Image (cartoon, rainbow, N blue to C red; front, side):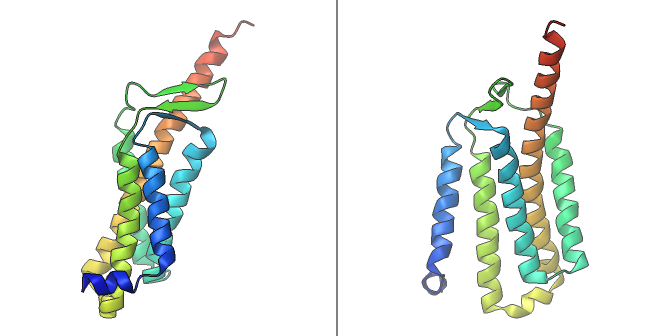
Length: 173
């Protein structure tokens, strides 16, 4: 059955998978990223997760509420965690210097695989779309991924704001 699912998967899905895999794998290594990329990645992945919810449940208030509640909960939870000690922000270049991490890769693969599994499951069992457990678990899972992505970006933005404020306070008048 798994082979049939894979054989009936459109080719572009594999291209998206490998693109996300490549982007995520690059983040396993220490790197420098700008403010724009720090912002765009959670926006793009959040949009993909909202699309996942809407494509399955339409504009269902309950599904969107489940997504939002999970996103806010994970955002609040992750915001309580400090950034890794090696994280730096260069105000002059407006660049973050980040240690490598598997978290972005796991989040990207989580959203992608959730979308893939949900799509394959609904292709075989369309009646699940109306099931309570499926209708709650899917949006919550998407929202949780989005909340973690957003919180990681917010923590970096807070670092940038603090660094800019300290730089402004140190400058001679």
